[in-house]
Every structure is written in C-alpha cells, then in structure tokens.
Amino acid sequence: MRRFPRPGRAFTRAAALAVFLCMAAFLHAGEFANGRVKLVLHERTGRFSLYYMTDTANRRYEPLFTDQDPRTSFLTVMVNDRTYKLGESSSFRVRQGSGPNPALVFESAFLTLTEEFVFTRSENSELADGIDIVIRAENKSNRASRIGIRFFLDTYLGEGERAHFEAGTRPVSGETLFTGEPGAWWCSRNGNFSLFGGFPSGGNFADELLMGNWKRLNDAAWKISVNEGRNFNLLPYSVNDSAVAYYFEPVSVDAGASREARLWLAGGGGEITAARIPVRDAQALAALPQGVQAALPGVQAEALPGQSPAFAGGDPQADLAAVRSLINRIDSYIASGNISEEELNALELTLRQLRARYGRQ
Image 1 (cartoon, rainbow, N blue to C red):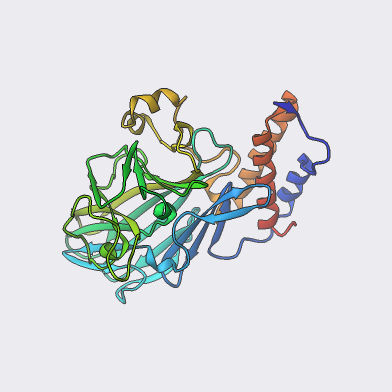
Image 2 (cartoon, rainbow, N blue to C red):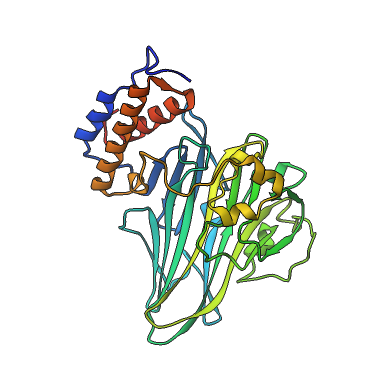
C-alpha cells in the first residue's frame, strides 16, 4: 500500500466530477468497454467478439477467442427438431437489445431469443475481467415447443500448446465430452493470457460441454458422434483447430413461456492459479479440487463496484449511479490515505473509459 494520490498523476476527484457533469455521448454502437474487457456486437451477422486488456498501461487488448472472422463462433437454436444457425437463418431478424445490458436479439414469427451480456469480475480482480452470458428463448407460437440451445465458440489460445484446454486440473489434448459438471471450469491459454469458461450459479447449466475439432463441430447441425481422445485435426482443411460447444438440450416450453441458458467467459493471466479462477458461488467452489478450494479466500458474483453492468450500455441514469459510486470510492481512499497500485490503476482506467465514452478526452 502507498499514500494516495501518487504525485504526477492526473487522477483527481475533480476529473471524475467533470465526467459526471458532462455525459453527452456514447461509445460507438456495438462496442462496450468495462474494466479489462471489451465486447463488440456484430449486429449484421449476429455474432460477438470479446477482448481482454493484457497491458493496462498501453490499453492493449487481445482477442479471447477467434475474431478474424467472428462468424466462426455462433448460436444454434433447435425448435421441434429443426435447427437454426442464428445470424444466418432467414427465419430470424437480428438487432441489438435496448435494455440496460448489451444484447443481441434474434426474432422470428415463432421465437425470440435474446443473448445478454453482463460484465463481471473475478474475486481478486480490481477490474471487470469477464462476462456472464444469459440466453433467453421465448416461445411465441400458440402451442408448446421443444427448444434447445447450442453455444459454439471458436477457441485459439491453446492451439500452440501440448494440451489445447485444461478442465479443472485435467489437460485436454483431444475430443472430450463433459456431462453433469455444472461447477466445472475450463481454460484455453497461450502462456501470456487465458480464456476461462464455465457456468454461473442459479441453475440453467449446460447438459453437455464438448471440446473437439472446429470444422467437425461446425459442420454438424447439432451434435456429432463423440470419439473420445480423437485429435483436433480434420484433414485436409482444419489442422490443430479446436473449439468448444455448450449443449442445452431441448425441453418443452409452453406457449408464451421461455427457457434460459447461462454461462460465463473471463480473461486472465497465462498461468492458471486459484486466484484467477472466476468461480461464482459455493456450488461452483465445491466442484473444484480440494487444493484449489483451500487457496480461494471467497467467491463473488456481483459486477465491479463503481461500474454497474449498465455502464457499458445506454442507460444514462445507471451511468450517473456508476460515477457516484466511483466518486465514493475515491473519497474512501482519500479518507484512509492508502491505495494499492492495482487499485489506483483500476480507478484511472475506469475514469479514462468514462471520459472517452462521453467525449471528455
């Protein structure tokens, strides 16, 4: 810990107040930044990209999964045994949501599916470092329908490593199916930074999570016949190319009712440590190995203090509340006279993002 503020830095309570008084512009439509995470919604194709700030001093972002062609990751919905690849099916129109959190909305005559993104932070992080993804499928038909959801992610970070993934403490170097592990986490990493994935608390867990070759999974309308241990090649076009698919199997949904699916994605350092695992609650904690459990001081699920989920959305009232919270945090540090380097960096980054958001560079 050191005294607050550090001489020579232009981080002041007055600067935060200036943002509070001058909110008049928004980030470019479809781009949302919070803490160390940047989310980009591609409305035309119904896809999204997710980036992690690996260098806070230079504000350098790296993609957490493949972003050269965002279409390689997507949602599939199954309705009464028929599958629709969202963003490409002519049966669905795509638009951005208008709620407090960033969202993509897919609409048809018989179904509305909303993919909502909520910024979150890990237990030991001063900044938001991930997102909870909430997928809601509403049956608009006049009779019950069986509705299933597949979330398909084109990963790349582990493709230069011996094992493309780690699930808990288990290395995964070939096609692998996981079932009945709602608290489990997986990781794709390249030595410099990592992508974590798993499930938040409250149910709505995936029935299956499958790691396999990207093309093999991409070419399947829904599922493949799993070949445990098969490598991540599909010659000649897809070599050392892996992906992750979450399956929320079809269930009956009454007319006018909806079903929900949840998962989370988060960024982290290159080394997998207990402190970097973005577990969400006691149920998830209980699923981790005993050695990892002992190393975790606690679990947390709320959004970053001072940055409400609506900070990256389009709700000015929520943004005002976020800035008030930021000012309160600054006041508390001034009162105590101490602030850590990470806490100060977090405050400065939050303020820079607010200033950029409202045209106060």
